[in-house]
Image (cartoon, rainbow, N blue to C red; front, side):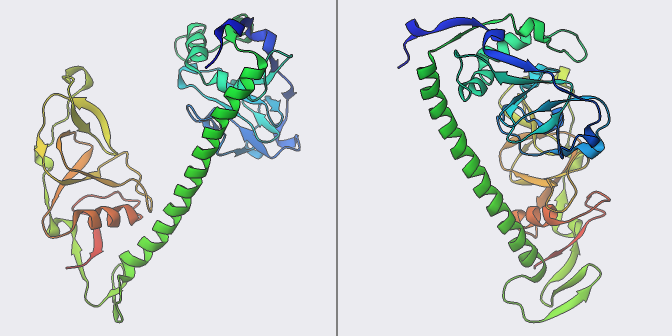
Length: 325
């Protein structure tokens, strides 16, 4: 347990420096990586992707390995992360660095991800369109922190959890790649087939048929009914759109296993988020096609649709895929 009696109140500016080293020409800085607000993810302490400085022209800031990047614009998005390399960063962010003997460098990122910090950040944001935080205001805010020894113990525990999360994410990424490779083989070659035939969409096993979606499903689009947000009655029934659940409502129009296919807003690239299955009471708006699978396994069809690369978009009239009887 923590001993609150040993906690002290400090101003943010007493434990953190705002680094404002300017880089006027990022493309000529000698640095390869750029971290904009788009490279920061909500509630993610690690930066998982980087942009190139070759595409950046305006004046930006320099961050060093270990510095913390805080998205000062639209702080409600809760974007703060630690950089694992020297980089150029957006002028819409702050480059923060621990300062003095009262703060542990590994504890500071944990503090910046806490609800306490975000509550303060929101309260001092200025502007209506893109609320922004000024350093002069943030530096004056009071925070209560434990002793450095306790900070280290807290940070050790939280970073151990973060490390486990990162390992799990990498394992999921590896399994996703394995699944994609397996799907590519199964959805084009099947299992154990020796003879193949040419079709308009490529080579498929001789035993397979080429069919259109409307030949093996029933289209229930006529039953869809969009509800504007102001007209929705809150409840516990999922309200679905193009890529998934967007809200919860009081009533339902479907109560069975169905395949929803994004009519717009879905990712129609290969292995994109094109379709998904629902199996409970639900309401669907007009941004997703509603299909009842009558002559095809619903899971197979979902995987097949998500496997396709269709720049035209998918509708029951346009899509044709390789399916087994």
